[in-house]
Image (tube, rainbow, N blue to C red):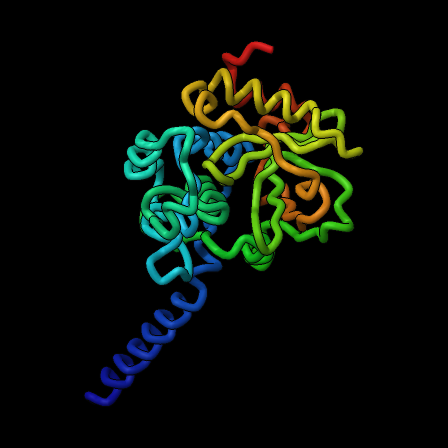
Length: 271
């Protein structure tokens, strides 16, 4: 009679062991568990703007294999803000390579943003990967699809654009085709504007970026006024596009103009 209970215990132990292995294998795929909204994504993306410096390796772990502790927590790390407060207009990223707790690189910023959009507690699996691996990782989890650079036809708020060197997020596309973007790029996390589709650097997005940074983040803008980025941002980056059933758009931001989207993010901004 003792054989049956022992058999049951053995089956349970095997099941628990297999469940544990399965959980480890699927931990990453289950990390994006909370459905969120496009407004949340864009709003969260603004939190580090003008407060966090660009640091090569910032946001990664000590092993340089994935998310560090700061990009697996909700909110901004106090070390980021205190480090940024000590910097002036002469900030040089070469002097702070791999000071991983002091700021964010481009992948660190997007990884932090995804964590703060989809997660509700600290310490879960992170989202930091190499810049050109973040989109494919999200696609593999069923959260959207990749579009090759030479096949991009439209841009929407929330799109992630990446190549092997950099990744950024689209806030909005202006009427002249230029993109208003958020990214971590030297000297730090900021809003920038691309040239127009015809290559004119004096674009609507650049003017809008300068307006936002100068009025909403004046201390930062006084030290780091550059809000420009080059035409490669419109030509050399593959696109990740969210599935609407995974990232809802309750406020219909995808149907709004660039200025309307900015007004949602910065209600006090006067044009």
